[in-house]
Length: 446
Length: 156
Image (tube, rainbow over all chains, first blue to last red; front, side):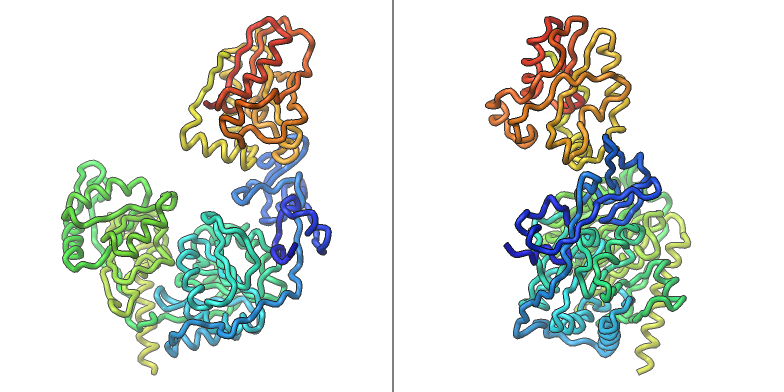
């Protein structure tokens, strides 16, 4: 039996067949240690009070990463270091034939250098700048050098959108897509596309680890996932972050020169980001939930969109608002204009997003789950209750960034409707204006 | 046999609960129902009149899960471990379909006192599905008492 499947994996001893265990130099460790009277998990690195992870007979478990299967003092973990396993190199590695703009090329080049020097590096590029394409050349170099690569994102949807693009760009290179919603059996491949949660199952596995949308939930405030990322790369590996909206923590690191950053304020089609247009309402949610009425200004906008024949997105703050909003919108639109609602726990989530892609429906009403990583080529959008606290500055900038992403239609409408003009809404609006100014300058300096 | 259940199992929230508590092994989740379940038992089957026998788990389950999910749901009541899982049964009840469950031979062994004649018997389990588990338990216990035997489960 081949042991390649276990290279760089951190798995339960009981899950490895005895024959493989006996014939390979596995390192063994406790799944859980008790340190200073607290529970320390060796998979996610998190510490828990004893009473929250207590089991009878003086056993303990980790409640923090239990979603991936429970780690407890009843178990042992094993890890097989990466052997000098050579990946078979296809004749043609990069099957992507596109071109980069000179701005993209510069960022791509800087990324390349960071990988060669095995650095921690941030590629900060606006929504729709073409981050994925900027990865291709550096990854090609890595693949040719026999390196193992992971591209991870906190969001399942982002992974699902990323995988086919990586697959098309590196057709003949072995790869796998891992997340909690697929039944794919793990295999040893040169490229791994996965959620950041899946990184918990790796140890010293990757030469290059790319974390896409690094500022998004749940990665941004989960120390277990940050630990997982550090643990999943080899000692001399490169850690690359990608985002359009760096978190406060990353911004601080940039300011203190602790993080090498490459910055691109320009979209790939070199048009400015659509600016946010504000609409003010007087308790919009009450109007919908109690009076079953939709704001007049919104009706007017929706009717314009219906005539223009483009698709559109409607964002609301909470899942519980979806149905009521859906109803009033249906009442105000012609019957032949079909839509759907979609949220994180929706069992048909993937199918509904696909319906939108296939143009079977005209609009989606959704929550922050579609704020990033998804591209619908020609859309307009409105955020109802943009002043709600669930929307952070980066969420709002990301949402606005869904619009005008294709060369065919680089413009589009972005409306934010709010009861109050909050600091967050203001800052999101200003950030887009700022980025556009930067982009303009960049173009003028040619 | 007379069984009472407090909740319906065929509902998403309850299934989700058991998924976390029992199948993923999040023992801390016992706290969600422990107080309520224990109080229900104490009130309806007072300890003066009733002997409480929890449905046991196998050695193997104890090794992997690390706890008996029934006992986790009980606090402040004295449990009598009169039943243990018989050695030969390997497959866990919840992994079998209805037919398989019905075909089974006795899955428990009685290790309690020869005769129980002071108290009624209350068999306690977490989920009532086909009733087969409790039937086996009753079949064994019956041989050692003439008193009443009832059962209670958290969900059905």
